[in-house]
Length: 78
Image (tube, rainbow, N blue to C red):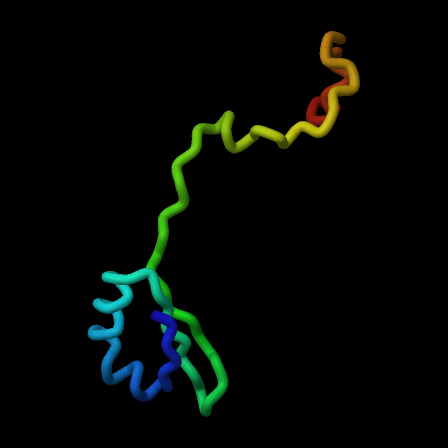
């Protein structure tokens, strides 16, 4: 369902439109004087990921992965 509707018609039928959107995966484009102004669609919650899954691929390269870290290497301490 992909529909265009004017602001005034949307206001009069908002609850009906919301119920239709909840039952489908469509969207409604709300127009203002014939020009698209807003899009209303069903909310889809982001998939839950573990912190390690979110960081996967974030490191591009390792400079020296086996060297120890000295106090002078930490910018927050200086």
